[in-house]
Image 1 (cartoon, one colour):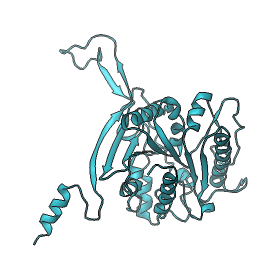
Image 2 (tube, rainbow, N blue to C red; image 1 turned 90 degrees about the horizontal axis):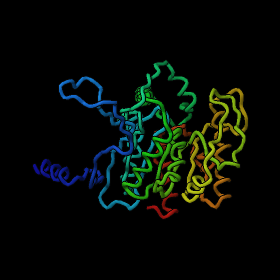
Image 3 (spheres, rainbow, N blue to C red; image 1 turned 30 degrees about the vertical axis):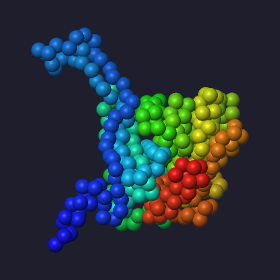
Image 4 (cartoon, rainbow, N blue to C red; image 1 turned 90 degrees about the vertical axis):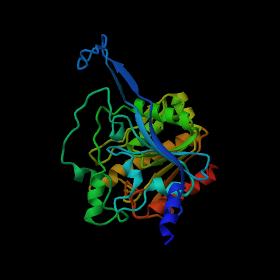
Length: 342
């Protein structure tokens, strides 16, 4: 007879029955631009554009802070075609990394980058492409590796994560919004995935307060001007893998940031013309090794982990969605502890 009052008390206290307790949560926009049409706004003719403004190009952020939270927030940025949904729940319905790291005591901030998802308000028009391209991404993301959730329902949920951009992808907008976010919430660990990794590298050089970067299968890597390696060819449609030139001062700022780079399974160890997805990611891993060596040569602290070499097998391009996602989270959490960020 006392079950309902107890559950009501738990809800009021922000305490779930399984122990997850949230002290604060909410959402906000950060960064962005404002454009104004020429002329003066006329109240009597409100449909005319004269003098009207448009607020857009911002990032949309949702956050949760657990009870007795650790001092350093975690900021999660998704990759190409993805929104913050990918961090919420795995395709087969398990807890995503949002909840995984909340349970471990970290404040979590999920980002929708400018011109995508909940941050879709753009100041530059673009028509989203409508193409039947599911199989292209399933192959490129190595989804057929062993640890991806099985079954049609999980696959259907995964494919419905894909989200078009409402305007041109602008790396400067993304990096500036992330820098503004870290200035607002304090020194943060930046978790990036895939294309999001490209934007994450620029945040320290744009004044972002970045305590560390955990880059999950980033698709490109920066190098200081004058030390840019040659592109790495491969047999994928995305050949070659090109390095990103970075101003010397911006690369120096990045080198002051501890970096963990993580790659999954199903990646070729040598050039493989017959298996273009494995070969495409082989080229990225090769570029990653050059990047890590360059950062460390400049006095930085960068580590590359290839999960099979660490005894964690079967991972796709989405290790936070795979059936062993908790094991990969353990690896990242252990690294954060080693850096004094727990």
